[in-house]
Length: 209
Image 1 (tube, rainbow, N blue to C red):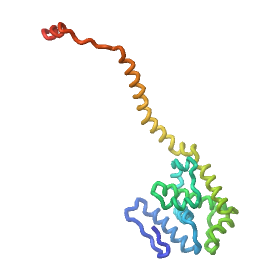
Image 2 (image 1 turned 180 degrees about the vertical axis):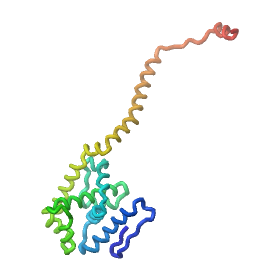
Image 3 (image 1 turned 120 degrees about the horizontal axis):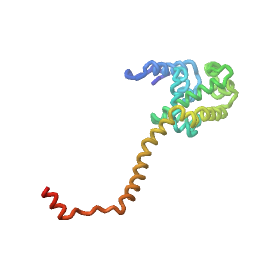
Image 4 (image 1 turned 180 degrees about the horizontal axis):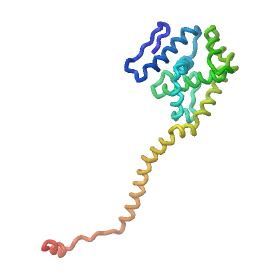
């Protein structure tokens, strides 16, 4: 975690990807040191992911069923999801990164530089977004949600690996249906079959042999 007011970063020594995590937390410190105004949590986390080059977070959205179903939170809900359980937060971090990427895309320069310059100058976040994208924050939110739905559709999910997941599920489920069907056939074939008990005479012959 990063403590911007203390200019301190706390990291686990056994972090699986320590350099990337350090870049992410350094981006938090740099943003808070340069920008004197308050920014929403989704922008704070999305900017850190964007600055650290964590593009694999966006790739994770391709296999997120909630996103595929079109269950995209609004930006206020996204702030709450970032503080939620790990499974929810993983998708939230990726969505925050996609929102920040969309802010850059909406500017003619294709970068965040104009937005950051206005924030560094003390302009309110919503006013800075409107000045650099031409959209109110509400309008930007709607456009971002539409973009996410378009980029991470069912087709994208299938191409990204969801299709193999469906195949695996079918492989597990189909044998159960087959056994149920075979059970009914076996029961039908058993009807009318009777095995006569061995006669006493036959048994004596077997013993003499």
